[in-house]
Image 1 (tube, rainbow, N blue to C red):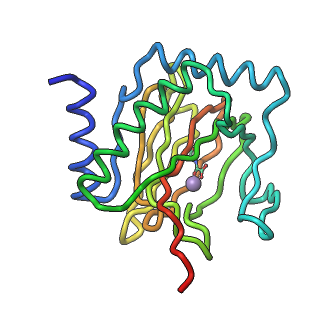
Image 2: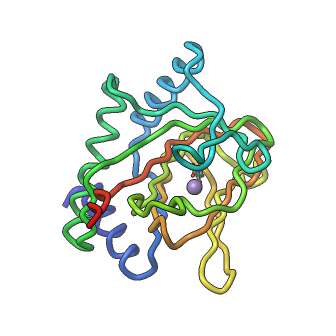
Length: 205
Ligand code: OGA
Ligand code: MN
């Protein structure tokens, strides 16, 4: 069996048992490299924007809560972005087969955290909208050391926490409604790809 297929099965099993999963080297090194290059080119083109919080009328920039810069995957994806979306499509199919969540759409953005930037403890599901079901995060940072900081801290039941270092190729996913999490400040720049699998909004009765 292919290595990536094995990892997919491990992710599904962990989502089933504990609601979250962390896989090192899920994203191949050459793809990580190309995604990093894409991010650098977006930066040079001035396509990174200050991230906000909330949605629609509620949307606003709140630097006391998050201070990263983002760039959404939009219509014209380059080959690296398409390859990433294809790998995530396989994950989506596996998740749909096992959990019947009816995931159908993936929204993804690059996120760049300058040194000492952060994203305070939060939940990814918006208050008035439960379409975000599964959060997926891929890290793009080569040679990350524990002393660089910048861990993703996940809050588990009973205020237990785990910390995930944002090392290149590491992939994290968790059910968006269940796990609060936080990005701790880092000593160096920190790049990630964050996304959400969404289900269709319920039709009003
Ligand atoms: C987010 C988020 C975590 C990370 O963008 O909602 O929590 O580690 N990102 O980049
Ligand atoms: Mn989040």
